Length: 283
Image (cartoon, rainbow, N blue to C red; front, top):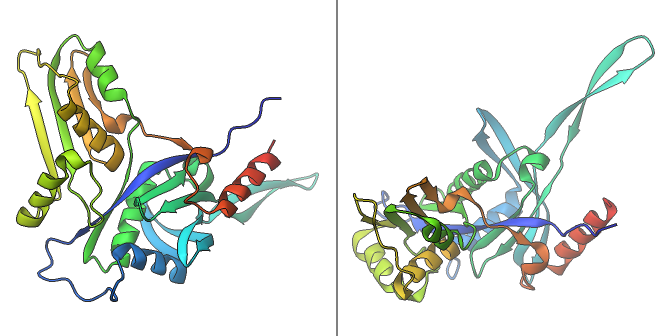
């Protein structure tokens, strides 16, 4: 019998920006504390967080949190689900409601500001990955008293940009939307300096670059500059778009996925060990 693959995760960036509408930031952070530190502190203290999704109010719960040297490494996310079961007494069927909390695992790299979310989130907790990212963005922003804006975004699958370019019979435009470096400053070295300047001098949080040919004959060259732009988006967020003879393609059309065994030693071995045992038990 073939061995079941280990759990698959969506890698998502956690970007944190000062709220540009606030005239000044209140001293909500202790000396030496970062917004990331405060987010994890709130998760540990409160554990339950309200959010709105699917036209109803929900509660997202963080459980089984595991620490290494006082740093949150991961745990499980769940929400209460009501399941209806039908009992048969031989004469009639009777409905009974049971509360259930099927969880998903999450793993965190504070250094990289990457949040890994187990890929079967919709089947387990009833929230699609896109809605879950929006919910976490809102929850994390509220944790920081809205003095910072937090955006949780899925990373795109890598390599699609050049595959689409190579098969195109004609390209109308390509567009790159870059996320300006957050306070952790994570972008490729080739464009980091300019993006940082825009953030500091002009309060820009994203920048869009578009190249267009109305004749549908735009040349997209696989040179170092264009590669750097694609790599930056694929590794740090943002969106690339291609409009060719077949239609419009975006990096957000396909999400990156990573196997738990490829995530790295930065995460708690306890979580990975429990995941392996859990999956083995379902064989």
